[in-house]
Amino acid sequence: MTEEHDEKIKRMCQNVTEDLIPIGYLDLKSACETFHAYGLTSQDLSDAIHDFMSNTGMSLEEIDVCYIAYDHILNHARNHIQESIGFDIVDDVTTEVSVYGNYMCTDFQYTEQTVEEIKKAIEKANADQCCDLFKDCITKQFLIEIEVLKEV
Image (tube, rainbow, N blue to C red):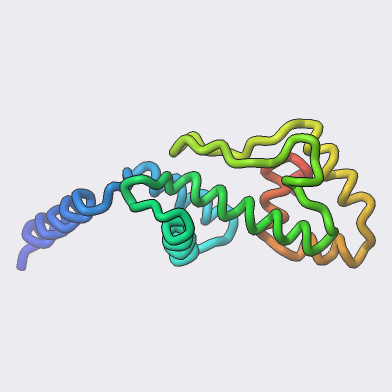
């Protein structure tokens, strides 16, 4: 086996994989980068995709992996914030934090007023609640991303 042969086989495998998987490479790369930024793994992303498809009945051809990545992070942060300080970043704010899904342009959607409301809720929490809130790396990174916290 030569290096040229190995390279041709590698390209063939990549081509077949791309033909079988209807998710664009750049979309998948973006979703992976998002998960990596939050300390999550490729297995975490695979699990989130499977869970999303199972919960929605959608197929691989119908999903937006970037939306799924952001939605997973939002749900994790929402649940942790609710458990830690008793505040719901969707129901207890004037304008909910949501996910704007548009493949590689997917992002969190929120207003300045929402950010201020979340900051006030954190300020009202006691020290133990805040300690619990900030222990979770995903939630902490989420709060930085939506500009509730400043990155140190």
